[in-house]
Image 1: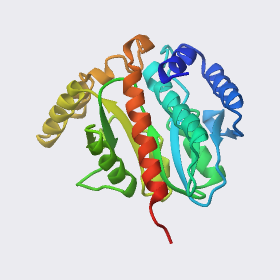
Image 2: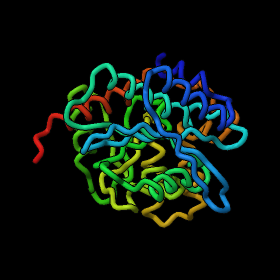
Image 3: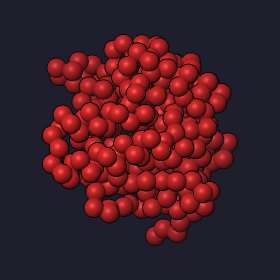
Length: 273
């Protein structure tokens, strides 16, 4: 299945149905996976899914499968689930020799990042050296990496930008927007410095982002900033009943998947002590 076909298979489904579909697909691929059930106090119970590699060095690829009520959840975040599964399937066919990949499908991201926090509480960082978290990767022809304040970069983000440049793809690093959270944050707070989120962007999104940061520098209110950024095409269907696969592009997801795979290959081949 290509990425868009995966999105169509889970859009509009409940969180429980999406989770069970992912488990069934992993079983179809012949992959051993862990169903991480957890309790989160007032947030109730949840269940993450992850695929460990049991290698001494691991890079995480993360996505969340839950949706906000009333949204079909195509771009947020079935597109990311699809890319995660696409990377996994390719690595099964072409295994990396020196590093492993740990694949995450987090629950309750839409409720204060509860699933990823529960994972770290119960399992810790372990052998992870980095986390590439995926959000909204089904639209656009450019790749945004965030949050990177004041020119900060990391080993994985630098490698990703270098690999994108080889293919004449365009990547941008930018700070976090005040309205945005994602599952990289608990990993950063837990001490995993090479953790960030990947989002697919269009020219219109970049223009809206430039206006946002310009207004922020001039002291605009949070309300005005919220309005500005939500004028971006990326947010037209965000958390809305219109977040459907008909608005997505398989090429966008392939762009992200291929870039991640090339980054993993280069990271795998780097000499390490």
